[in-house]
Image (cartoon, rainbow, N blue to C red; front, side, top):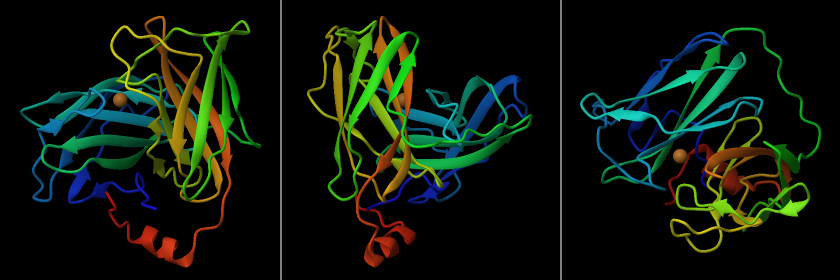
Length: 257
Ligand SMILES: [Cu+2]
């Protein structure tokens, strides 16, 4: 199992120091650069899911999730977007990008936001959430090894929602992070790639494999009525403890693409 999303460098690429508003409630620019092995800012990227870079921001307690698409200044290689922090805490940024001619990388950094901190406490799983009046229920199991299928069912006032719209080339995007180190899991939507104007629902299914048993934070981005919404779940993964071999593999961050 290849562990990703726990390092600011990968394959020679590095996520620079992040500029961001320092205090909760403050609005400002979030900015960073990806540098190559020579220290040169990368200015050319291949598109993935319709974008050159996907930025995930989440507080280390699994709250405050955002999925952002910063703008690239093609001359300097600086990525930037405007943010306002709702709350204080340590936030992890995950920049998912594919430098032109290279494999995709997920680079991460932690930034601290000053203010009154109230970390979330998680007890057990959270599989049923309501976001903007839309209910999302998550069935299935997250497993180690070959993994398992997770199915999100979307409803509104008890009726199935059948008007899920394609967002970034799929009916849903699921990001899974391991509690403790926020290791980033690549989760793949099952089913065919929708065409623009297609609608689906009420189910969206994903295949995911957890690197270890334990607790994971899951975030489902989906679009209904032209608006992207995020449902946040907590799921316990089942499966055998990692073998000594797998552990060794993890610590050396072997690239298995
Ligand atoms: Cu994205």
